[in-house]
Image (cartoon, rainbow, N blue to C red):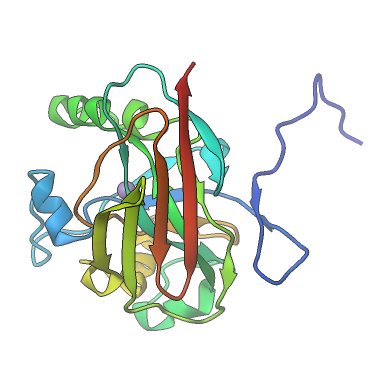
Length: 233
Ligand code: MN
């Protein structure tokens, strides 16, 4: 039996609707600029005919359950919400063809890709890694997983409100690269594994939150994600 100097970090996991077992998390992938109107508001329009999707990752330890209160993070003055549809992978997949992508989908969730926007934009514009802007502690917020094995979501309203005021409202049928295309492309680079989550990108309307703000997000047919922004540490 292997022994350790101290207890290893706990396995990150999420509740699964209708099941006692939790879904153990492997990796967290995020698609950048995957709705045209959001790409435009970030000043970086996308031309799908000449571009491929791009990705960043966050540590699994950034995973935070819906309903949590998180501290306003350090070293930012511009902490942003991004509402996203999350795909949960349930089977191994490498070089998956788009037409086969449904075979490795376990289910879906509603997620928030919380971001230090000021640091992300400095990194972007200086050609530095995005980690300080994106790999923020407690920034990968996720609802329960809804089992929908083999289902490819192609449309559904996606919305986010802060303190009850709608700030983001779009439809996942506006994804530049749809779920089949994302799984096909991402699996060219990575051997996808059960427990990988893919945050599929945010629509337009991203904005800043302050301590005390209450965020609610919905994806039609999937569910709700909730986050309370607490005081700064
Ligand atoms: Mn995002």
